[in-house]
Amino acid sequence: ENVLTQSPGTLSLSPGERATLSCRASETVSSSYLAWYQQKPGQAPRLLIYGASSRATGIPDRFSGSGSGTDFTLTISRLEPEDFAVYFCQQYGSSLTFGGGTKVEIK
Amino acid sequence: QVQLVQSGAEVKKSGASVKVSCKTSGYTFTDYSMHWVRQAPGQGLEWMGWINPKNGGTKYAQKFQGRVTMTRDTSISTVYMELSRLRSDDTAVYYCARAWNYGMDVWGQGTTVTVSS
Image 1 (cartoon, rainbow over the protein chains, first blue to last red):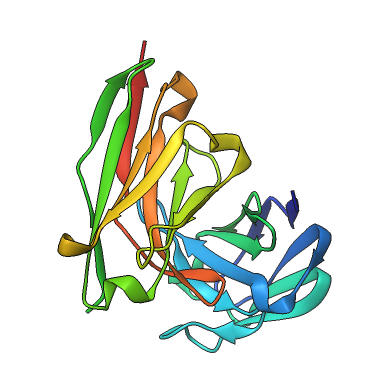
Image 2 (cartoon, rainbow over the protein chains, first blue to last red; image 1 turned 30 degrees about the vertical axis):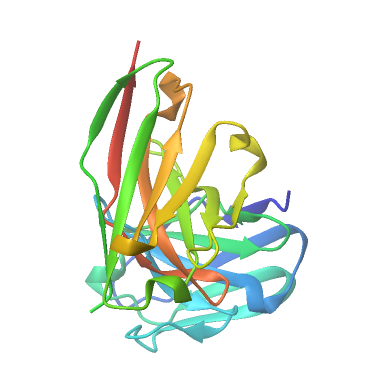
C-alpha cells in the first residue's frame, strides 16, 4: 500500500499569510492520480485539486497544487478566514489511500 | 445539480450488519463509479472500495475484503454499501463519493454508524 505522510500535522497561521502543505508518498505516484481535499468540521470533504495541479470547479485561484513522483505540495497563497480547515491528500494507484491530514488553524 | 443523498444514522450491535444507501440525482448514474469512504471520530479518511454502476463491478480495500459488499439498483439510481460482522471500531461516518479524474468530486452528506456492544 502506498502510504501518504502529510506534514506538518498542524499549521498555525494568520489570515493573509501563505500556507504550504506537504504530502509525501512511500511509492511513486503518477501526477494524474494525486488529489487534495478540504474538510471543515461536520462537513464532507470537498475536492480542491486533481491531477496534482488542476483546480476543481469553483475553487479559487489562491489554491494551487504542485509536485511529482513522491513529493507533492498544496499552497494557499493568502489565507482567507474560510480556509482554516483540515486538508487531505489522496492517491489512486493499485489501491487508494489518503494522507493523515494537515490542520490549518488560526494563529 | 448533482446530488448524493445518503440514508439516515444507524445504531447497531456488535456482530450485526449495516446497509447504507446513496441515492444519486442530476447526472447519468451509469457514467461514474462510486467510492465509499469512512471517517472514525476525530480521525482521517479511509477508503473502503468502489462500485461501477454500469456493470456492478467492484474493488474493495484489502482491509474490508470479506466484510463489505457494494451493490447498485440502476432503476432508482442508488448504490449501497453493506458492512457485516460489525465491531466497535467500525463506528464512523460513512460517505459515498462520485469518482472523477482519479479523485472524488461530489460527496454525500455522510451516514453515522454507531456500533455498541
